[in-house]
Length: 54
Image (cartoon, rainbow, N blue to C red; front, side, top):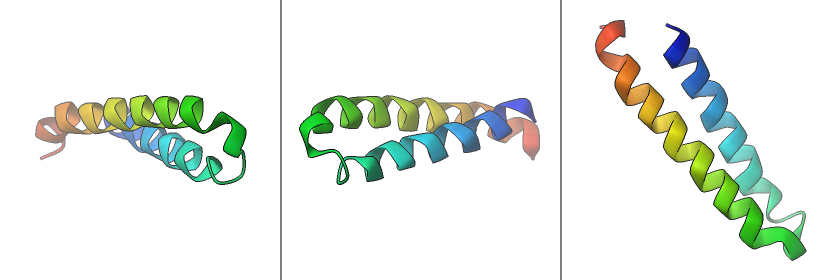
């Protein structure tokens, strides 16, 4: 259950960082890299927690 909650938080943070690239165009590369890392980690956590939820 902890993995599923952490995955939702990680995906939310990654999405917020991806949205922030429009607000800070000078830091687009760094924000996109961090957003991608958070999204990959979040989806990985969701995939590993999914069998335990069902």
